[in-house]
View 1: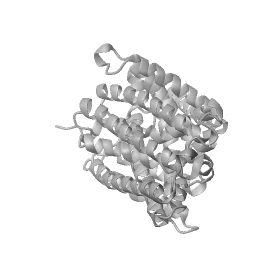
View 2: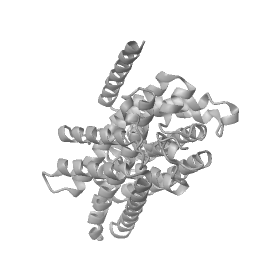
View 3: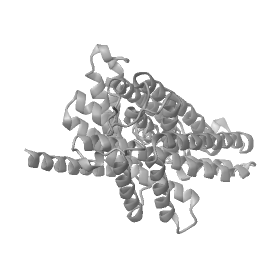
Length: 417
């Protein structure tokens, strides 16, 4: 007889890959290039390569761990199993805090493109409620809607690239701008840290390990497929933007892809690109809510969050209480704050999350090893380096939020003892 508190395995390689794609492309392709260009100019191309290498190292660690621990929670579980409860807690706390802020930012990004002036917050809250309801009714509904959103986003991006190269007189000579190293290596590393935010969606695949069929085979393949496609898409978009409007144009426009399209003779494609941005934000928000629910479920099972959140819906087999609670929290944040500057804060929490993942994968025995330890060492060191180059305010806020989580856990442990 099946355990009513265990999630159902309903996702294959294709659906798991699509959920990862929806998280990465939606979170980054319309949002991350502007601050990256401001930090590094055309050096963002080097930053993109650095971010991709770090993402690959972290992805191999996540895949190697997920194949052995195919349950909800991702690095929260891996940290507990390999390094101890405190390491797991730090990873889980970083994910939940950072991604809750990121979910609110994605909802606001959607509203910025889709809502009439003055209605941004109500529309953002409505989007959270609708997508939380989709997640509530089962992971297959989540995967089905994500599949549609990803196809629409990729179509919009394809139209944008064609419009830029066909109607905007792109000049490859614009790509280097003042030089790839004009802003120095600090600027390049800061752009890598900001662009890493755009790659972090593959974690959603690992956090949903309890719902994947044949996880030892499916999770590593899905992570590799989603990350590979995303790297190719980002590289094409980065080159297109720099060739069309140059590094300064990318750095000074919050919607550089739409601007690049609208400055050419195929400006009719501008509304299509803006619609694609709204859809991309929805896809990222949908996957974020799903991933947050699974990590919160895992933490609640171990009493690192209120145990009440560990319930699994008897019919839909989803962590319904965790997802509903998170939706309320995200809506509350939207109602009082503007979180479009939350990329750095989110990156701080996610980089801590992957630092724990790399260390945990490094400790795995040879029988569980799929990738050389050198990748885990490189991934861990790179996480630390990118954390050090994030904007100071993001680092300070991140440290304060982790301190708050540690204090709460210490209080809980002292009461328990």
